[in-house]
Length: 260
Image 1: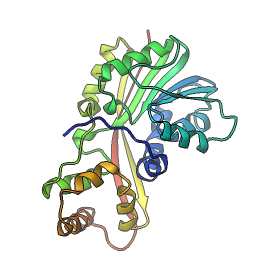
Image 2: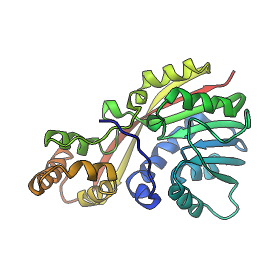
Image 3: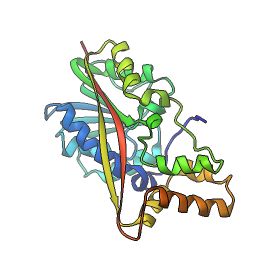
């Protein structure tokens, strides 16, 4: 089941996904190797987790951070220091409020599979960067169980619940991402898999972080109380979680190319 998705609660998103985003973002930015002092457009900036990395890790001189959710933008503004070189703009990925060729690099962090027309989103990033500029993205490899909460989703399906999938989930594979970048006319297209691990104090810590997902909570509403209890226990067994720390692995697809 696919549906249009938009996140509005920046604090809940941080608990559920923001921390995962930063883990993948570190590898992603190292791989891109965009020079310090570059101008970026951060498409679908959400609560600012990746925007913050652009400033701190990549030393961007300026970032135009764009998201359709006012609530996420409010959280993002608050997380960065006053005076950070960021313009926070409300807008969508398929119609970016930026001038042609105004940036050195454009990126989508965990966004492409939410864009109704991924090719239009990529075309907008291409338009936004100068000749020779970098166009890049990373996103969970949803169809190959790369999503951080894939274990919960798999056990939900066994019990008859169907977690919703992003509207453009097919774009999340390496092959599909590469095809989108080639079709957009980009050169020197490369892809790679980013494997990240997140440590939790214990299973309940992991479970409570996942509970911040509105999509999973809604999907679980079709389950009885007994089934919901069974779901938690089944996931615990799937992760082979005891009383101590739990480490969960996720995989993301990364893709990059240069505007001719």
